Image (cartoon, rainbow over all chains, first blue to last red; front, side, top):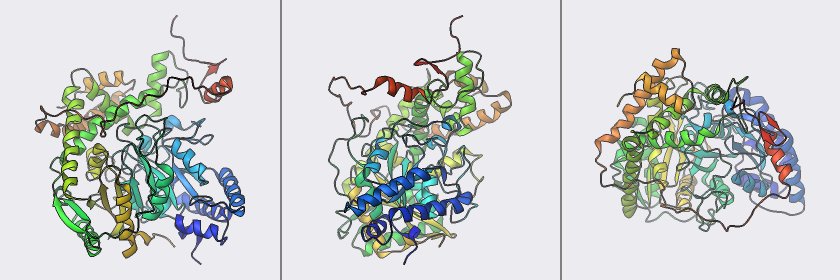
Length: 485
Length: 99
């Protein structure tokens, strides 16, 4: 029999239904693995062993009574950006090191209602600001494929935990690539839904017009099962869209004959490492064999996505993070001499360097005299980027390309140069600015490290993306490649 | 557009952040590099383009104007204040503002 930690969500569901093992057995098995292996990888910030075993026992008694449900009794992890009632939620920051939310995020509540067993909270870049996990207050996560390399970020803890087989799946959030890039660098499957598809309530805000939560798992099938539970209207999030949620597993097996795949010329230029380009072309050839047609498309403004993003995201962050003032929750400096000192020292001591840098950029871009040159300009560029995608989707059904310009890089190689770190997200950021759904799926190995294929869909076309990803995964084995036994 | 150390200090003040003297040149240098990246936007004429704030051009939802409150307000307040750095009888405490 396959080791319990190598099972996918769908296989765990089957095993539980057939009584091959109990939820308690697989939960205990994964908790034991985390205890022995996570000293090396640092994927988890907080574990909830007691809560996990209680939830597993509750699931086992429901299973014994004949209850079903694709997620009942299935072990799971949440990125530490999602508020969990009674369980510390740090967002990777000293500022929230002592923060125990008195409520659940909508996504957490929805998955809890489905009977998932939460093992713990995964490590991340501080306030989701980073592409390498090196900005976490709790230390960087190590990539299980090579512990000298970054796992990507900001959802690096979730991605690495799945790759190291410490959890079968986890939540992530994606503001500029934070689900897709770590999924690519750790060799797993990640989906950023359309902006508004998944509630942001209880998900600690970074850039509210870009942030979107989504599933991270081993397979597209598992991502579909999770999105079924996560998606949907929520009256607690005024940007959450009120349109029906389809069954994302229903279209997984549709044939790809006649599918038109757009290849943006700008995503295959000289910035892309040659081995990466070759790997992506091999993946595309597989999709062609399945009946898809490849068509060149243009996204002429895509080079402006990183510049526009580094105005919009910091501007929104500077506003969102103004709530951390040492008064109602979170860190407070010692012995403040007056209110100004309380605010300034709390924030200066509680935030890390990258977060402070982004607050400064955002504050500057929004300040009197600079608003038009920066913020308004960036919002205009955002529309141009959006129009590029609208035109492209008149010719094609999905867009495909690399997720990142290179495989996982070594620790310390980019963290002293913010601009080179920011360019790591060159292929993912435009998708957030346009609010489109995007996926990364494992598509090969370069330099012994996994490489991701990015798929981008039209608004609310998550089912199409999952269908293409699943069909690819039925004819290839890259998603089964594992850094450990 | 490059930024000066004085502008960094002024911006930090607005953002309620302290930049230590020993860090100011490095912070200025890094933020200047980021602004240089951002300035690539200026090469494009966007005079005719409407700014885009929400990708779905969504409008704000309005909820029914009815009172929604928890059953036990005091208990809920206490739960929220349990995580506060300093409270007293339902109030959040901060350093004295008025002498």
